[in-house]
Length: 149
Image (cartoon, rainbow, N blue to C red; front, top):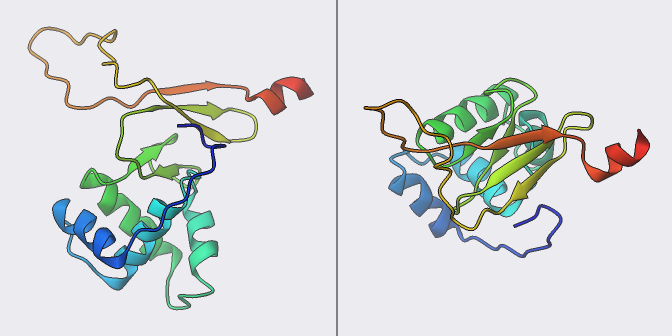
């Protein structure tokens, strides 16, 4: 799936609730709206982008609540943190299929890269280690930034 591919998502409140409860996360109004935003907007937003999008319709929502909710959802394996490990520049992703990411080091744009379920087994840990997941992030310049150089 490419981030420029238009797709229509219309998740119900029940579907969002199910994702939370299946992930072992206690539902709250804030968690529902934040997860719903990520499920509907596969644009790899930052905390600030999520806050700015939701705050007009949820005026009691704070950036701290958004940040803490994202960290909780990531810890539960419901979403992924892309990039800087959770800081201000981190981008957040909800996806139910394995994929890699390309992160433009100039503009920060993130693009999904579908590797069609192929195992990232080319990275082999030492004996005795068991890989449970892998986050593949390729970094470089997107076509727009490459053209500007």
